[in-house]
Length: 297
Image (cartoon, rainbow, N blue to C red; front, side):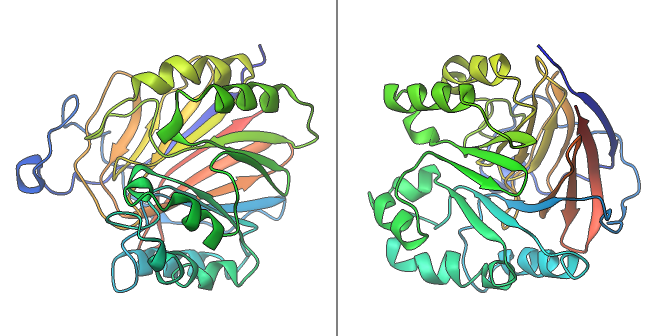
């Protein structure tokens, strides 16, 4: 199997909040990666073919911290607009009220999508709570909860982690990953994480059902939300797992033996794709870069 090289710069910030204050427990210990000074996000390379903004657990709506995250996306896009916008689930808090789809999703992210970014939404557990997930999908122009979307040279495989045990989804996933594509990169976007050091922790069902397929088909990057933090794993059987669930609210995070960096920081992820290189940059609300790494093939 062709494994991809990983190189990176990491810079973690202090852990925000406490488990006692927020009413949550910590998975693993509470040690973050050694602190390094963050730096302003550098200019985007002219060689970048496709640029994708990624944010998770965004559904707090107007008047909340998500607006500052969106403004940072806009500020960062002044040099080069985004081709895609991936939302990693929990699109509408607290219970997936479809009547809020326009105000919480469409309107909030209009400053990014109006500049040409194609919306690629993922459903999360909160989006199912009112049993209105189908209506939410319709409001954002989708028909299925799992699908493949091509954005530039990147093929994004969107999965529904509320239906991990669905035979239909498993069959579709295997067939899609096995199908030929001329996309330079294939990545996965879902809500619940396979590997996490945060409050919710790793999802055993995903590890059992889907992770073997990620490894079999040499998927370099799997994105998730659910835990309200930023977490990047060390490569696990050639796959790097990134959690970006801190676009609007935060919870404490921890450290596991598979953790490369973990931090409780309001942020979004900036994904830059070239034919032979994929660069992921984590950017906080002040436009500072606190993690960056590259995958190459």
